[in-house]
Image (cartoon, rainbow, N blue to C red; front, top):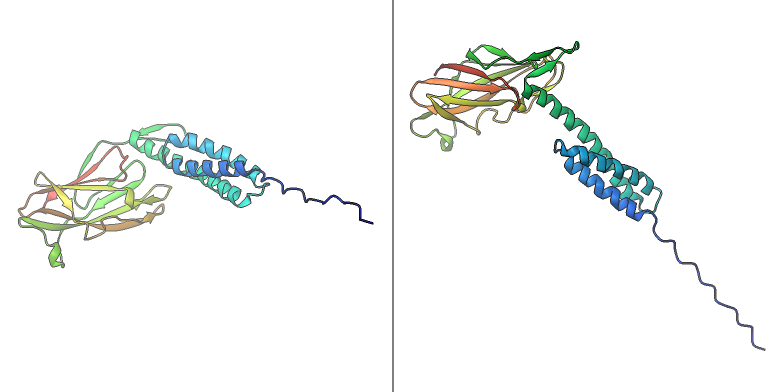
Length: 241
């Protein structure tokens, strides 16, 4: 006798991926949030997008695309933190640009007018930075290929920055320009410290060197200094060189 036919058993198909779309959305929103976090004002919107992405990413962590969800969630957190930090910096610099600072009692203090100083003197801004420039000295370039052109010479400036504020200050945010005999003097970027990068703590002090190319004939040298590009007032150090 033939055996009765027994129907073949088929394994059920594997379950479809869960929360894959949420993981992708969290990753995309995280990237948008990180890129937009460096743009003031616009980062308000990208931070909101990152917040939505964070929620989606957390939900997607319970699905089968955990790695993608984890990356997206991490990027969203990074975007939110970066936005908060950058907005705080923007607000502080905006206060400097407006020339005001608010005390504990709510008093608004205005910054002073542009100041004309002699070399060796110091100027203090309302934000706590104190900058002085020593008497310029001749600078001799040892590299024969970097010698000044005919009718020009180099001078060296020693710039001292003291931080009398209650927060850290990086001297790379300072700006310094020069004029000699009524003409713009170009900085010699192959000498001195053309891009000083030093974090100065409250109460700290640092000195860096800047070298400029000026005319060979004696004339008035004017050095303008600001502690940041957003500072309202400028200190002008002036002398015959």
